[in-house]
Length: 345
Image (tube, rainbow, N blue to C red; front, side):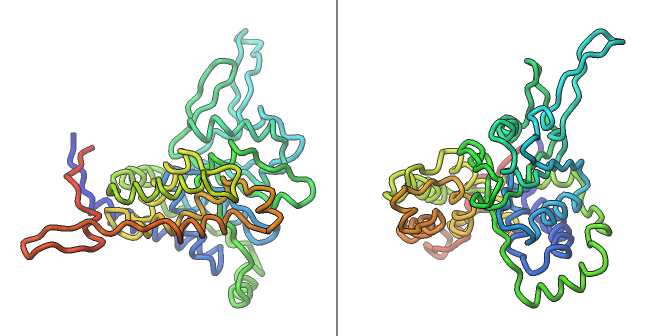
């Protein structure tokens, strides 16, 4: 048992994350909030779904994040003729050894880029379910562990576009967060023409962090403290989605866990050893909205899942900061959320 040094770990986290952030933002112009969310999901051990129209940089963001980390990277182009075995792997008969030999598929990498994931059939999409949740693959009764860290960054076009299949609920629920890049501002687009006009900035992108550093940062994020009022607040938000009249499917308990993990990662990125209700609020739409299914009446009224989550955020009471007893009396403040016993690993 070794003592866990929070401050040293958070200092290391800030330095490494700033290098990765600067590397990715050198490719994705004018979208710092999107880059921050991507790093939050990475450190929270989640998977990221990037949904937007073609040409706004979805695949560029996924590649920039993957190349900024010295990890194994595999890219899967999802097409209607893609087979599940192309993703997970297949056992092939070896004539010399007189036995089956397993050939790993593209999922055996630390960062897996799934490009246009909703162009593949639901059967092929389902090949990702076990690997995303349990970080393993089972082929012919044999289970194979996936490398660590492991993250799936998938891109998809809006479902209304031709030639796409909507992701099933079980698949969407395994993505920690969904982000939409959106169109750049005129200034950012003008700068993009200068940077991307000659050669792709990905060509010169070099790793700025190693896999073992990311593993240490993930371990540091696990140690971020979450006070009971913040936990209750996350549970209340998720529970409200299950009873909202505009939703026929609310968020799952997995969504609560993902929201809590993301809040811890967000707190660490802000240099804090404890999570605040603000962290939960800031991530609620990104973590919850893609899991929800509006009712038919809500769709007729053009009510989106994002609007419902915003309404729930407005209606759900925010917990007050716990009282902090000091030698000068009782005080309230954000620092009170950080009161915790020493942690050990």
